Image 1: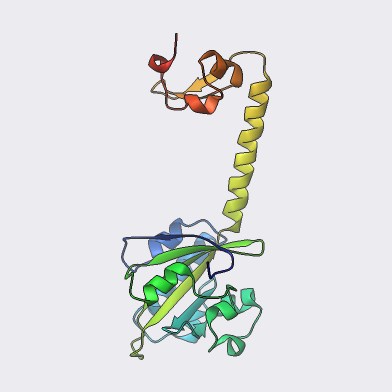
Image 2 (image 1 turned 120 degrees about the vertical axis):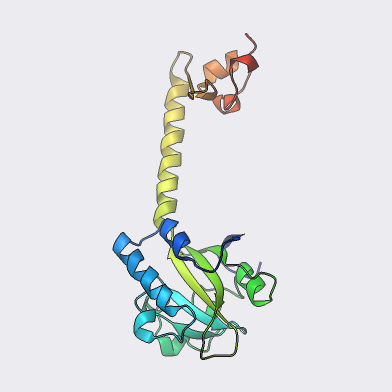
Amino acid sequence: MKYVGYIRKTNTNTNTDIRPRLNALPGTWGQQERQQSHFVLHKLMGTKPDRQCFNGIADPVFIHDADYRLVLVNDAYCQVAGVTDSEALGKHYWEVFPPGTGPLPECEGVVDGDSHRPVHDEIKVGSKRFLSNSYHYHDSASSTPQFLHILIDITDSEVIDTALRETKELLQTIINAVPVRIFWKDRELRYLGANTLFANDAGYKSGDELICKNDMDMPW
């Protein structure tokens, strides 16, 4: 794998308007920031980028050419990368931010023409996690293809997921220590879980093996 910190890739069949997806993604934006960024993105699409407009986007954004060299970056990108725009422009984006040894896998597919749809790469840089939304960018003043990336900070959502998982594991440990049979079901009377005592009585090793089963699947 050429890219340092690459986690996974996804793509989508939706059109190039990324505003609904940005609104749905967890991250550091507030509602006011999202609305402002949506307005800015609308003004940018299909036009020559305006510096003030470009810097109105709250999260790191960069545009690169077909050789993956940076042609435009916003203030948020410079801040997270720890560089000025003059230090960043002209370099391969992985030489600046996010750091790596080559293009993001899904980004490379778009540049090579393998995909004409907006794509996502999830990456990790230090303790931060980002979702890179990338897609073809049309600059009316340029005849060469360009590609735009918006980096959404999803670190907080990972922290929440970890806390929820640890809480669930702790609760399951407590339930397993109780010297009585415990189980719980959904409204369709399907098992959602059980403690170890109940699972063993039913012929299973753990309560997780009972998930989605009903009483007809039980040995009694």
